[in-house]
Every structure is written in C-alpha cells, then in structure tokens.
Amino acid sequence: MALIKVENLAISFKIKGKDIPAVKNISFEIEHGETLAIVGESGSGKSVTALSILQLLPYPLASHPTGSIHVDGFNVIGADDATMHKIRGNKISMIFQEPMTSLNPLHTIEKQINETLLIHKGMNKKQAANRVRELLDLVGLEATEDRLNAFPHQLSGGQRQRVMIAMALANEPDLLIADEPTTALDVTIQAQILELLKELQERLGMAILLITHDLGIVRRMAKTVCVMTDGVVVEQAPTEELFTSPKHDYTKMLLEAEPKGLPYRKEINAAEIIRGDNLKVYFPIKKGLLKRTVDYVRAVDDISVSVKAGHTVGIVGESGSGKSTLGLALLRLLKSEGEIAYCGKSIQNKSWNELRPLRSDIQIVFQDPYSSLSPRLSVGQIVEEGLLVHQGNGDREERRALISKTLEEVGIDGNAQDRYPHEFSGGQRQRISIARALILKPKFIVLDEPTSALDMSVQAQIVDLLRDLQSKYDLAYLFISHDLKVVRAMADTVLVMKNGKIVEQGPAEQIFDTPQTTYTKALMKAAFDLATL
Image 1: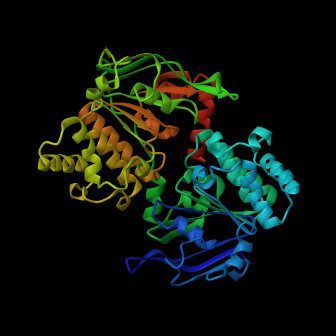
Image 2: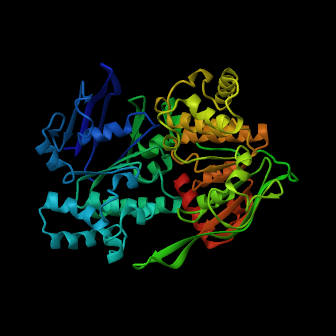
Image 3: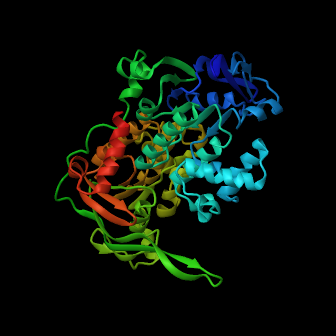
C-alpha cells in the first residue's frame, strides 16, 4: 500500500460567492521511503496540494469538490480535528519556505522544539530537553546553551532552516513535506540542507514530498516528478526520464528557463557614477547591565568599489557577508566611515537635506517585492510617490501618462495603475518595483537580491528586462545576489565578500572561470553543482 495516494483531487476557494478552482483532478502516489517532487511556477497549485494532505487549508473557504487523499489507506478529507492531530507531526510533518516567519520570535529554539515533544510524545521536561539536544545534533547544530537559549533572529537563515527540520523530525514522521526548503538560502547552505535531507531520509527511512521550482534540486533529490501548471499535472515521470525526454511543452519550457547569456558589451572608458573608498560599517556589541560596547560586528570592513555608467558590479557571498550593508552604505542609508563620491563629488559628509536632490539619481530595488510595496496604495500611487517627493504635484494627467509609459516599459499594462499589489504575480510586482525606481530617471540603482524570490522563468524575464533598461538608459547597477547564475548573466565585474571583507574581485569571466581563493571555488562548486545535477 502506498503511504500517500491522491486520486482525482480538486481544490476550490470560495471568493465573493463564487467557487474558484485552484487544483483540477490531480492524482499521484508516494511510496514509503521515496521522494516525489512537485514542480511548477508560483500559482500552479503546488503548495495548496501539499497543505491538503495535512488538511491545513482554510476550510470551509476551501473545499474539495472531487477526489480523495489516503494516508496509509485512510481518507483524510473531512477527517475531524482529533484524527488530524494524530496524523500531523506523528505521521506527516512539514517544513516551510521561510523559517523566519514560521518560527515564533518570542520563544527560544529549545522551547519551540520541545513543544512538539510535550504535545505529541507526552514527554516530561527532562526527557524533552535531552531529545532536543539529540535532534539538534542530528541536523548538524551543536546543542550549546547559547544555541538552545537563542531566539530565531539570532540565527542565520541556514541555522533557522535546520531548526525547522529538527522540529519536523521530532516525532519521526513517515512523510516530510518540504515546501521550497532552500529558496531563500545561499548556494553553499542549499547544498548542505539538501545533503542533510538525503542523509536523514536514508537514516530514518522516511518519504519526502518536495515542493520546488528549482529543477536542479529536483534532479538531485527526487525519484519521481509531477509537473504542475494552472492546477493541473501536465506530466508525471521518473526523474531521469523527465529530464532527458520531456513530453509536454510546459516541461520543456521549465527545463530551458534560467537566466542565460552574458552582459552586453560595455564602454570601457565610461564615466564613473559612484565610488566608495575604504568603507567601514561597524555595529557595536553591547553587554552588561550598563550596556557597554565590548566589541563590534564589522559588517563592511575597509572595502573599495567603483561603478561606471552602463556597467554592473556584482556582489556575491553568503548571508551575513555584508553585501546589503555595502549597498545601503553607498546610498548613504547607513552611516559609514570612508569616502563616497557621486559623479566625482564627495557625498560622504552631506546632510540629509543636502542629499535630497540626489535621491532621484540613486535608487534601490529590494528582494521581496510584496513586502516593499504598500498594500494600501494602488500601483499608480506607488510609482507616483517619488515624482511627488522630487518634482511636486504638477499636472496630474501628465503624471498618469508618465506612470503608464513607465509601467509599459517594464512590461506592465499602463491601464493597470489603479489596481493593487496583491492583484499581481511575484514577477509583475518586481516589475512594478523597478518602475518605481525607473520613473525618476536614475543613474545608479542598487538591486538587492531582485530575483531570489522568483520562479526560474520569471528570473530570466527580469534579467532580460534589467539588461535592456541598462542598455537603453546607460544605467549603473550594483547587483547583490547569492544566485551566481543570475550574477553571471548580469555583471561585468564581481566582488566576492565574506565576513565584511572582499576575498576576491575582478572581471566576471575571471571570477567564474578561474577563481583564485578557496572560498570562491567553494561558492562556484556549490552553485554549479546544483545547476548541473
């Protein structure tokens, strides 16, 4: 008997009195100890399918017009809370995409893991404490007192994901559902987490349902693959067969969808737009009753960088290496030591008011377009905001015409400016973020992980858009990313950062083809091993 058997499953959501289908008559099985991957772009129905297995959808808003979900032969659709309580955690556990939003910020790591043990296993506090240490050791985290008493914000992204895995494994489930478990992580941490999941699967004999849009991960992890789009499974096959001879056009598109090509040829003697010399950003570490400064976190430690018109400087490195801090320092959004010059003139010691006229020339696009766009403002109001700040009210119709033109330039219908961010996909929201920066006709844009939250096919579209805009307007980019495939498609020069310092820098071809330092070689190996497996 299969561990999980899904037959003709349909999922609908009631919105404004209408039933909107999200998943349409899909079927698949997961055997004991095997890994099934469900792949597809955002909105394809992957996550709602996984949540249905645990009956975690918002019922009765969500419903199953047809189909069944059998767990060890028992149909869980319509099961009562007491029954699902026995299945959740004990038989099936789940780890989510973003551990920072899944972990309680007010509870220590130890409390969050032992809560599962106290509820499901009936352990006493001493037994739970011992088991927590075993679980942390199992997922590769040393169970020190500092670690046990730490809060989620005190851990790195990779450490938080390991904690989530420890919580999911606490009751030794038969099935682990991993929903985009590595999307927000650095390539080296991705490789570690994937290796950890494989080791744990072999050791514990559990099955894995892997939800992802990264086909490199699928090829490394899964035995069988289901490809979903618009709520339908369009292809289902053993992994190697699907990769070597895909049948459906959508599958072929997914396999080909990744950022390709190289940056456009640039003018070598282009004007320097922004320069930072010997930049330092230190954050004090305060301890004791009087909160005296005992040391500093050297987030940016004596770094120099120059960006020319029409050129892209890529900044790569793991989380915590200082990439984003360097970008914010160059924009004078963080206090720093050293010298910053814009178009040859020093801006390091200028006051906030003195910098204000320059703000329209230097812009930033953030990692997560959903959290960086106000849900209370229409798209037109969001894009218009910079115009109102820097150019005054002026003529409203002229502003609306300019907003429409800018939206169309980034691939959004100009008539959509009265709609709101939640009405757009992730890729469309990122295009809106780019339009907000672009409407002021800047010379320099900091792009802080602008593609990491997006599907592969959408990543490729955004990279093409950014390259086209750069060519058209001679824009200077500082491109911050841990995705080396994207950096290779964008950057002329690459800086590799670790612990606030530059460990290697040079032309992109040199860094990618003949890296010199051990750290850079490890980054490249992790990135391209994942891409080619």
